[in-house]
Amino acid sequence: MKLDKGILKEIFLDGSARIECPPELIPAPGQYLLAHAPASDSPVADSVFFSTSSPNGFVAAAPIPNSWTPGASLNLRGPLGHGFTIPTAARKIALLAFDDSPARLQGLIPLALKQGAEVVLLSDSLARDLPEVVEVQPLQAMPEILHWADFAAIDAARENLNQLREMMGEGNQARARCEAQVLIRTQMPCGALAECGVCAVVVHHQWKMACKDGPVFDWKELL
Ligand code: FES
Image (tube, rainbow, N blue to C red):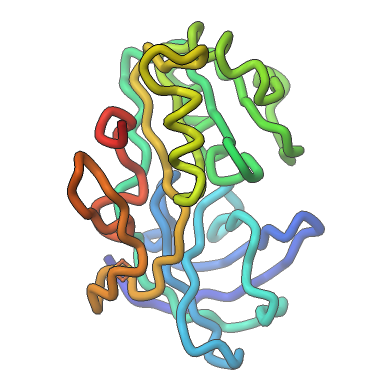
């Protein structure tokens, strides 16, 4: 984990942003940085997730704070948390953007293709810069695609976890037979520094902190 400066170079129409920063700060897919623009009026740092690579930095998934403008200097801390780990044997990979854009999952695509896997993206939102080899399906194809996959990476908001459990739990149509990991999106204002508890998640009937124990969790832990 490092502290350093970055620069917000460009904001795209979809709300994602290109950030230049030292290479050791670039988060892996599922990890995050805490970023604060000192010139903004925001009192707290925001969590920023990797979406795709870009020269001298990375493209951060939308949304970024409204107060950030191109050219802004950013104080960065990270990379923080546990990201996704694709099993080396996985050859059929489903990326499931449950309730938002698939941007936080897109960084897994080059890693999956590199190990010779087929990739299906399940999303009801548009994704930018997708390789042609990636098949895109609507969320209603979840049962079929989760049946096909041998690994699934999922992005879901904490408040929608129960809905995800209902759809993918034991006995349900979209039950995940494969190994799966879930990026739980929630506010992470202190990034484990102050143990504020804002990011708490119930895992195996215990409270865990998404900021340091996650934000990516094994699906089995969440059932
Ligand atoms: S963000 Fe404060 S404990 Fe997780």
